[in-house]
Every structure is written in structure tokens, then in C-alpha cells.
Amino acid sequence: MAFDIIVKGGILPDGRGADIGIKGDRIAAIEPRIEAEAGQTVDATDSLVSPPFVDPHFHMDATLSYGIPRINASGTLLEGISLWGELKPLLTHEAVRDRALAYCDWAVSMGLLAIRSHVDTCDDRLLAVEALLDVKKTVAPYIDLQLVAFPQDGFYRSPTARENTIRALDLGVDVLGGIPHFERTMADGRRSVTELCEIATERGLMVDIHCDETDDPLSRHIEQLAYETQRLGLQGRVAGSHLTSMHSMDNYYVSKLLPLIAEAQVSAIPNPLINIVLQGRHDTYPKRRGMTRVPEMIKAGIRVGFGQDCVLDPWYSLGTADMLDVAFMGLHVAQMTSPADMRRCFDMVTNVNAEIMGLGDHGLAVGKLASLVVLDAGNPIEAVRLRPERLAVIAKGRLVATRQRQDTLLSLSGRPASVNRRHKPVH
Image (cartoon, rainbow, N blue to C red; front, side, top):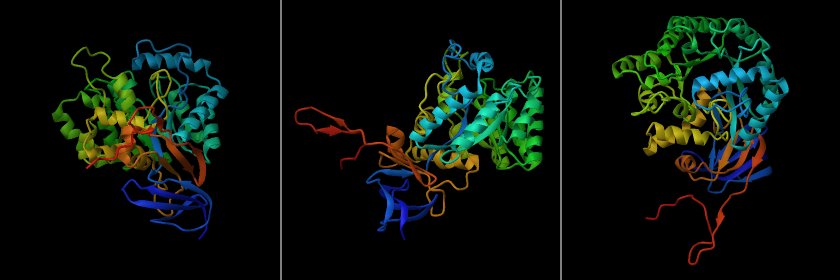
């Protein structure tokens, strides 16, 4: 058999050495050694070959807008929301589109080939919705972009948000979002969860709610979300994003809550980089970490992924589109430092996130979509430690990004001529 691309000499995440043969946009063979003709050969010798990275929680309408019209001086979530309100009237279709496409270029360079982006539906123009629908079409050959209709100022709190959210769905937005903790009352928040889930049920959509992104332990909309998921038969199609109030809840209540979430098959998407920066801002000391209870959720059988959330926008002044940065921060904040846990963190930003987004064609297996990443690392733990170069990125059967290994040259008497930070234990 002749292939369009053969990836030679790579190491799979499970430690096996393998060549990967690609025909068209599909993986056609994974074997210890493939001897065949190919249009292109990618040298992955001693390098980790991974499924592509996946981000299930992002805000592409705001990305790369840092400093417009000003910088978030306090660094708080609420000032970020206020600043976004100042920025929205200044947005143009072209600016939103161009910043989003620039971010997608970054994403491709980092092997990030699937993104779920929330898009604000509280602007009556729906300018950002239309711009990101254009972006979705443009990047479709190499990035799977899901859009979430997100009434960012509150489904009920913002006078036209409900109408605009329905309009966005009619335009072709994929997923239904919400922000119950930002409604005027807890009762309105609960009511919004109910109505949003009912709309999603009627339209056959997935649901992804910004849920309890607060330090208030009494913000418990995740309970309502789990209840509605079961009542309406939405199991497996619903995610609760952030869930930071859980870091402040009493343990007895959480012992009841986690089994409810697991039973409803609601996924959880904490966002380590942003949660650790924005939460706990009212604390002096002791100061809360800001991220939800990731190890406890995993132990309870809840599907947990990690999201990026923001890059260079009103809420976050950093970011590089690197999901390994996200895994690295998540590992530290959740204290998931056993070898099994560190591997799990890598799996969360690849396979688990793909499951949350419903990407059935994702993964390294014959017949799956031919999207993968070659990393300058020997295994998933080393990849999280180093956040290494992406030596090659293949998207839907096309080689879309390459980079040379970046070893550092040394000039030291009696020491090697070059060094990288990959580690081979000395026995």
C-alpha cells in the first residue's frame, strides 16, 4: 500500500514504538514498521506522537484584544466583565475575525486542532457571532471549531439576551451556554438553567454552562444543571465550566453533589490558568487556590477536562495557545503529581477534552481522522514537564506545521557540545 504521509519512528502515548500511515484524511495503518512508498515522510524518531490537543473552553471573540480600550487594573473577573462591556461597542466584524484567525494560526503551530469557543450573544448586532461563524468556515480544513451561544451579561439580566441567543442558534451556533451565577438572583440563575436546558432539548443541542464561577460556596447552580440533565435526558451532552464555588463548599454538601453530577453524566471543565488568577481576589490569607475539586471529581467518576479559557484579553494578560501550559498549571494546583495523575493530565487536554466536545473521530487509531502532533519529548509526562517544541502537526491528512529541534549549543570545558532538557534516567 502507498500512503500520502508516513510518520516514522514515533513513540505512542502508551510507550509503543510505531509508524503511522495516512491516506487522504484518515489513519490507514499503525504498525511497528511500515515499509511503503509515501508522498511525504515525517521523521518522528524517538519523539512522542500524540493525538492533537483540544480546548473545550475558550473565548475567541475577545482573544488578542489585551489593552483595548484599557488594561484590567485590578485583575478581577468583574472588572474583566466591565472592560468587555467597554470593548464590545468598539468591535468590528473584521477585527474580531482577524484576531480569531491569528489565534487559530497560533493554535495550529501548537498542535491545538479542536476548540470550543463561547461567543457573547448580548450584543444586539450579533457581530461577534457572525464573525466567528465566518472563522469557523475558514479554519474548517484544519481546526474543528465549535461555537457556544453565550449570554455573557445574563440570559435574563440582559434585556435582549434571550432573543439574541435564540437568533444565534438560528444562525448555526452549535452549543447552548449560560451564566446563572451572574443573574440578579439565585432564583433567576436556577430558572435560567432550566430554560436553557429545555431549549437545548428541543433543538437537539449540547449544553455548556459557565457554572458557579465564584468564590461563593452558596452558588450551587451545578446542582440544578445536573437535575435538569437527568430530567430532560441530556446525559452525556452537558458540561459545567469553571465550577469554582466548589472549592469553597463544605465537604458534606460536596459528598452529596459529586455523585449527583456523576449520575447525570455532566462533564466538568475547570480552567486552571484563569481560575487560579481570578478567584480568591477578595481573600487576604489564607487564600483559596481558585480551582474546583478535580481529583475528587475524577475519583467520583466524573469526566473532567481542562480548558484554556483566555489568551491576551480583558481577563488574562498571558497565554500562547499551548494546552500543555494548561495541563502543567492544572497538575500543580490540583496536586496531581503521581505518574498516573500526570499522564491523566496529558490525556485530559487531548482525549478527554475530545470526548467532552463529542469528537468521535479523534484519536490515534486506524480509521480515525488523520490529525496528530509530533512532540520533542519521550512520553506524556515529559511533554507536560517540558511543554516542548511541536516538531510536526498534521491536520486532517495535511502536514500544516513543522519546526526543528531547538537544542542549545554549549561552550563549556569538559561538557557536551549541546543540551536539551529531555531526561534519560541513569541506572
